[in-house]
Picture 1: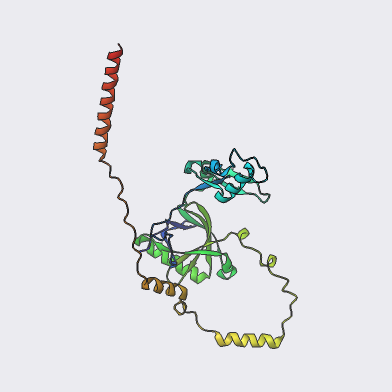
Picture 2: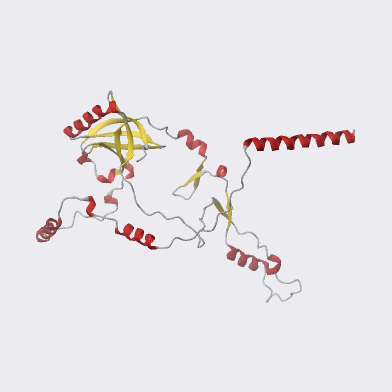
Length: 306
């Protein structure tokens, strides 16, 4: 059973419909984790790169105190440079509390913002999708559409107004445009009637869509021969058919899954058992006993010195 990513209401005017949003798509990409050749899972750390440290084997690399020939004895700077190039930058782990978010400007300058300030202006999760306008679907280029969700009635009482709203949108030939905050990100959305349910499509804002004229050469001046155009249309008509999503499959994924099914599973090394701690009561008793022993030692020491 799919998990709802949002619960709230669809609102327009004085009408509110309690709904749940479910993802309309289910990506089935094969997701690999990374392991070493012995089957141990590779983990990542937050690190920063700093300049190379002085080589720990400097005493072995530097020339002997008895060497006097400056032409044959390497200079300290040369040895340090060679060792630093060999060792590369030093990676130092960074605690999560020391991490800040930053953005590089076009001029290459770094602007950082503490997490607390981002949290302060971050929008709160929406409880409703407020429909502001109704437009024709044909007016929206698919390039503006991002992710699809199904809006499903939350309660049996909401079913009839939900179906009424669905039929009304189909009859009017319009879709709703609204806004809401999903998790922590504001979204522009299109609410459109499908065959039986309402779909909610998150959309890109206008300034997020590139102008094709900025990328494509000047196409207006290209002349097309009528004979070539007729031949191209004939080819399209030859290949036209009704849309059937089941007619297209991800052959790469199918081959990959078949290859994985044929391989012998790798034997993983036995995991070391985690140290078992006592219960909370046992830990409390141990701490109390240690405290009593420490207090007795302190009292004995004071009597001896008094």
